Image (cartoon, rainbow, N blue to C red; front, side, top):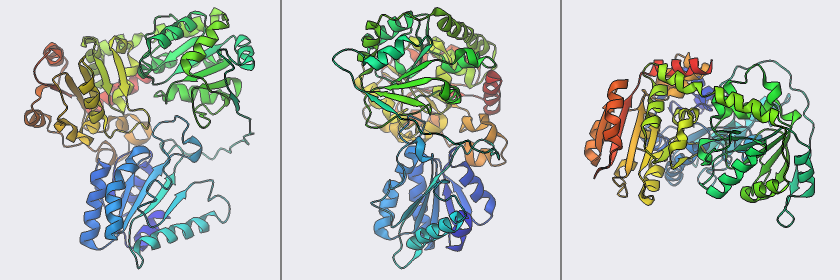
Amino acid sequence: MLCDLLALYGVRKAVLSPGSRNAPLIIAMERSGDFDTHIVIDEREAAFAALGMSVASQQPVALVCTSGSALLNYAPAVAEACYRRTPLIVISADRPAEWIDQDDSQTIRQPDALANFVRASVDVSESTYAGPDGPWWLNRRLNDVLSAATGRIKGPVHINMQLAEPLTAMTDESTPRVRGTKIDLALPVGDGLPHKLADTYRRSPKVLAIIGFMDPDPQFGEYVNRLADTGCVVLKEAQSNIDGRSEFVSGTIDATLREIRGCEDEYVPDLVITMGGALLSRHIKAFLRRHAGRTTIWSVGHHDHAVDCFRGLDTRVEMDPREFVKAVLALDSQKPLSYAQAWRKASDASRRTAAFASAAPWSDFKAVYELIEASPRLHLQVSNGTAIRYVQLFSGYERFASVHCNRGVSGIDGCTSTAVGFSAVRKRPTLFLSGDMSAAYDIGALALPMITPRFKMAVLNNGGGGIFRFIPSTRNLPELERCFAASPRLPLADLARAYGFRYFEAADEKTFKDLLPDFFAESERPALLNIITPADISAQILTEYFQ
């Protein structure tokens, strides 16, 4: 319906930016035959390019982006289009409304995000336009919006499309009725844990704590390790910045979960406690969502709304995580060790990841493993995409002074600038590990005047969006390389020379290992390492690992 109406309203050109949530929109426009499509990675550049096309052609031009901060990067060009009365049709993919503000990846409040600069907007969701009159109603609303863009007073408009799991196969299975449950709000009384929570904790033999991104806090880390020593299982992400001393703390969540496939039931907890920011691991989210009806779930921290990432939240615990864990320790509740020992066994088995990496051919998997193993104790900044997911597979990340990634919204925009800003403040050197698309997106950061010799940047140069070569639903598409992987122009040697970086390049394992000592050595200039890896082999190795 959308493509038909765009064509009827005179849209002939479309500027598409690669993404997973907007994959159905990209494929629909590519295959419709009605549009001259252009692929631009950077949404800021895409929007201004579309603006120029519209001004030159005197026709409306469509823009298509994925969910999250991608949409916000359209704002400068949309504002310009507003005051120039230029018809841009902004089409943003979005997550379903129930997942906004739930610590799920790449979600922000997208409806009306451009309200000050668009003439009209519509938020399209499957639930809103269900029923026999749904298609008619949606057709009418889309007509209203497109008329506002192309009518007497022209200007930009915004169509926000809520898409549920666009990269998985659609089925005809019926959805069972979901019954409502009350989400309690627990507030601390004095310094202790509320009585109801204390009783629940004492009566729960299988307790699983999951910790997302947090600022380094040695005192909190000590409390967490003491909690794990009581038999509470702790799964921590790399960006939690917790030193996992206890045997019941696992820092390789995805690798650990790989070991429990086929015997999940014995690992289902009675009580789940979540702390910290949004989780990177889609595997732990999938695991707990599958078993949400069998466990009690608490969300600990200060929020102004319920954060139900695992789709089964029972209680919002309005306490600082450090004070919460301290209060739990005061209960002196020792858990049966059988549950914790089962998780420890899976975690220990996950250490085979290092052996797998050692035996793997030259690839992203091999390169990230060797980079971590050779690194001194630096601060680690990582771009979004596969780079941070690779890092979290290896327990070696604990050698770093701290680990950070922009996981608030999970966008690839600004990752380099964030790392540069971090490095400018910290005295200890910073290593920034980036994918090539993230590096290309924020390439202007290399010109920032605040860059110091303490900044070291390593780029996984695998010819574009490697994650799309790994995801089953995109890796076999005929549009894969052009529309999704979208290999960026990234002349790193020339850029390093232009901006005064020491430059290193490796396209095989031996060269890579030989140059790492010099790359990490202190110098009067920042350093840039171009890690050239084979795209197809990198995707194949990652697929084999999870199989």
